[in-house]
Image (cartoon, rainbow, N blue to C red; front, side, top):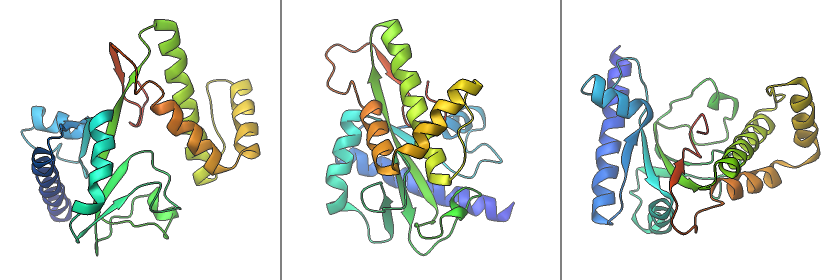
Length: 208
């Protein structure tokens, strides 16, 4: 309990720091996922939660990435696909240097920075057409799972045996870098769309 409490305190420090940083740079960010639920339901963290997530609209997220290199404090490391070749998260992890928070998943990859982290995610536009919106989200979700399973070396377990067979053939044929490019393109496919009516959680655990 003491370790979890100290971890939550570090998460809160990072979230507050990030919020003030966004204010200075005229960027909008907001809590999402468990951090948002905890703030509303518990007046803080969900008692057993060990991280916090913040979300931004795509235009703010892209600008965040562009100004980050010149303003990142020395004690933090911004983990992205570009600056750490063995990391394939579709979002940014702000990690505290000289700390270690090795999860069951990240412990498989000792070559990446595994410090205490704050996840920074983008929320993207999707189609205004219901049919095209469904296709876009399914394609994004499929690409996300292909990248994840290729990265961790596991088979794709889709909704049906046929879908799983097709996905695993694609996973074996295409290199991880190519699959990642397809994933990133699908995530932000509609970012320049005019008059969008819908947002989707493109980088979250469950694409929705």
